[in-house]
Every structure is written in C-alpha cells, then in structure tokens.
Image (tube, rainbow, N blue to C red; front, side, top):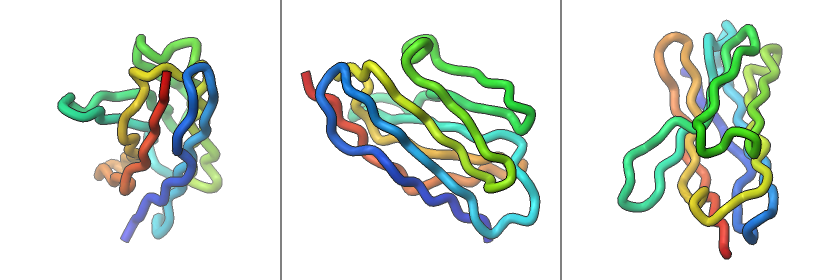
Length: 114
C-alpha cells in the first residue's frame, strides 16, 4: 500500500520561510504528478502547487514568486519551499501523489503570524 509521509511545517513570522517535504513509500512506480493542497479554517481545500514527472509545474497565483515546488523522481519525493510567508498562508498543507490513484498525506500545519 502506498503511503505519503510529510515533514516540515510549523510556525513562523510573516516574511519567514518554511520547507515541506513529502515522500512516497510502498510504490514500485513513479507517480505521474505530485503536489500540495492546503486548507485554511472555514475554507475549501485549494491547490497550492503541483509538479509532473517531467518537471512541469503549476502554482496558485497567490503563491507564485514565493513558493517553489520540486521533486526527486528516484525517491518519489516532492518538496515545497515557501518563502516570504504571509498570514494568509496559514493552513494545513496536504501532500498528494497521483499513481494515477490519488494518495494523500496526513497533513501538516503551517502557521504564519503577523
């Protein structure tokens, strides 16, 4: 069974940086795409960024220029580097991977204080 294990997250002041990592285990093949969603209290889950196995990326307009997504296909791992964080980035961040069945991580809290 494929599992995603997330690490990183935490609390930071506005303008700070955090790095989220996510690695898949239990799969014999590389995922087609990987990425991150986030969900803030009282809001719907939204796509933050995704990256294909070929390296193509797509980021939400709200994080463009601040967040960078990258992946290591050999390790089936994805990383989200978050810079210039703002309070509006506060949310639970969920890693996902499409194999093509979608697998989700457990979620990690990111809190940005002003």
